[in-house]
Length: 242
Image (cartoon, rainbow, N blue to C red; front, side, top):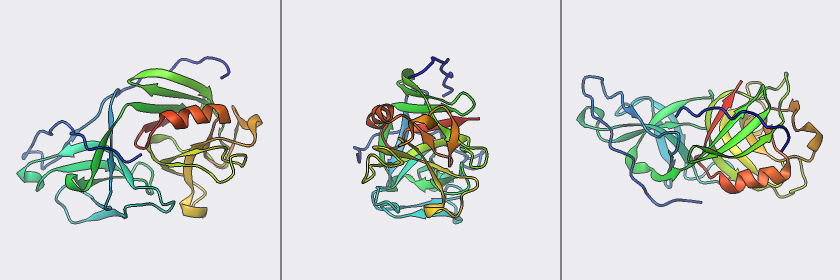
């Protein structure tokens, strides 16, 4: 795994339905909603029949539309970060992270369109240290060196989530045995297939681990990637620090 590094402190496949704690209705705040989740538990929402994300709860301005599956035939899953409820909101809504440009985009989806799952894992990546930490129940269960984007094709920093879990046809290829797609896109490779999505994946170039040589994705040694892939389900929050 390489040298040890201090783990950063935490601030904070289709599943059975679970309940998110009820949101406080705040008519005076214009249905601003409240955050959900903690350092131990996050929530993923599976759009089993597709979903429409709006700019605000009860609004009409559409931010994005999703089918039941994405371009890779993986079920659509959205990271839930907030909730709003009450007459001022026109019902119950979830604020969700969206796997679209610009990075960090969010929207509001009607609660009834999502099937919820609790997520107890979290991934933190520090680009300057070139390290990754995997947490479960807010405790570090794995740490590893990573390869990151080159200066010309940097890995974007921000708060994302695992939106798909993919297994390449060739486990000895450039993505290794598996890939965790995250809800982030390359800031420069907009012309790439599917808009330049970012993933945490294995590699056929072990010498790149610990280096800044990728096209923006986060590379792990294949043996380590298998462990991370087995532990981190869709909906796992991913924090990428500069």
